[in-house]
Image (cartoon, rainbow, N blue to C red):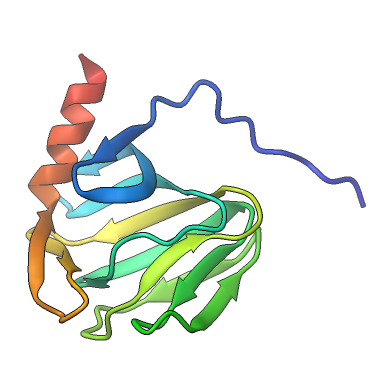
Length: 143
């Protein structure tokens, strides 16, 4: 089988203050219907901040392996390229990252208010990411 590489050279990647090893590009943010489409790039062999998803997320792994980790660092799940996943809101915190290459994952985030909580290792909320945060990023990309 022929192997293909995803060419992301024309994507304008952004970062979120305080969240290392993650780049993103907001493709669409539909405030009326509460659906936000985002490409996330997780740095190879790194993990992002501990967090929890407050709303429904549907994902498609486009490049690499999308890895999920328990709060204590143990590997929880590997989602290889081509994987589609539906994840309901959950109070279970986790970290995400890339495998041996950067992972690029398309997220369809369903929600209108608070979407994610970034946590410290004591599970204290450091920051809440909202739909408006993503709409603001999309609007700044269009300028």
